[in-house]
Image (cartoon, rainbow, N blue to C red; front, side):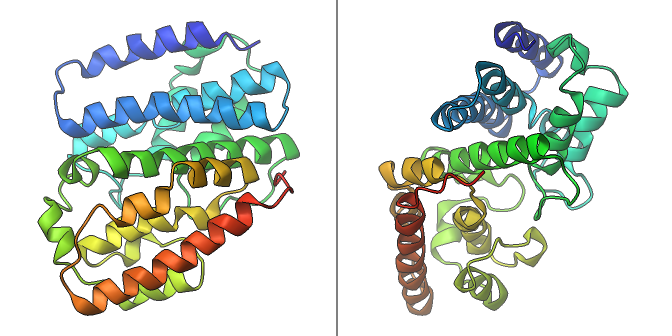
Length: 266
């Protein structure tokens, strides 16, 4: 049985080990964690899952970025090529036994572990059970959905610490050919392909191409996230501005089509 209230209390206790950290990115990730947990509960509810699966989805949302805090502490940044926060999170939960602080029952351990390990991968691993795949898709949707809110509300220097330092860098940036073509192909951007500041922004925008459930797309559309994220900056380069408008239309059309698709994606 998943006691989500107990898990939330334990998460607060866990975060005490980082109490000395007062950086923008730490605060951003704590807020992000709670929003992702809420998104996971909402999406699972809209899928008419059982109450236990809804609580499990929320628990996974609460734990999905637990490895991110060590990444920030030890590397000072995020999306570090040498530090996989999903793998690290699963390690501290299951190899160090931390998971028992959040849920006493071990019946969901494989689902939780696979969900955390796969939430930030470019592609979901093969060979998962139906229940594992369902929850992996749920956490990926919940996580990516909140990334749009983050890009709407948070400071650029908090979003990409050590990588992009100001809105001005975004506004004066070009778009690399590889990232642009990847978006035109309606695919996720590999973080290793990011070259310019704007590539980092568009990498997030392309998250829509990996979402799984019509309810997630509807939530995107209700919040007008594509336009909100694009319109945050005043792009100075003429070629960049033209490309951005092509991306805007492509992505809005994609989200519209997916949000009207009654296939819920399971």
